[in-house]
Length: 207
Image (cartoon, rainbow, N blue to C red):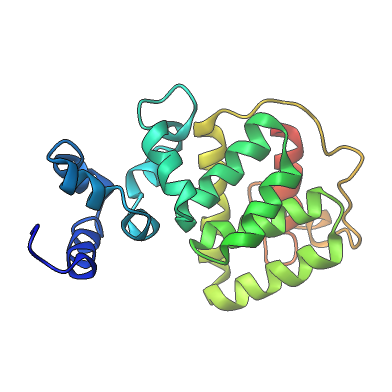
């Protein structure tokens, strides 16, 4: 591979990491050239971080995977940006920094899109959060799937280990409290009208 054009070589290595970053492990331990390819920002920007989505605790500071995850974050990998935003908000109480990171990384993965609405409402940006969550649900196309994505975000929060800092008690604002929960909805049985409300309440309880 050393004789290939560098752009072709990077494209090949990027394809190797499409399913999981663990496929790059051998290259990282091989020659300097292969290490250079496997750790190149072009490769790390696109590498699949599925193992981190399966167990978000792997991104914590005490994890052996943290240095590699940091390289992916520095390479603007969108999944890394999403997971780091959750860690900043839930574990360190830095929701403002988390929201800025989400704004910089777009709507991928879909958990990032939901998280942006969640942090917006918790930081007092109610109108922005409603616009974000409406566009999120419309894009996903199914409320049930959107609700499942929200639940996945909270699974990641629990895996990372939230610290009950209670830093949003004075900023959380929900302008139009849903009325549907007075008759049928509750925190574990949500509808499209109230699910962001209930998720934000859960966030306040956990973080």
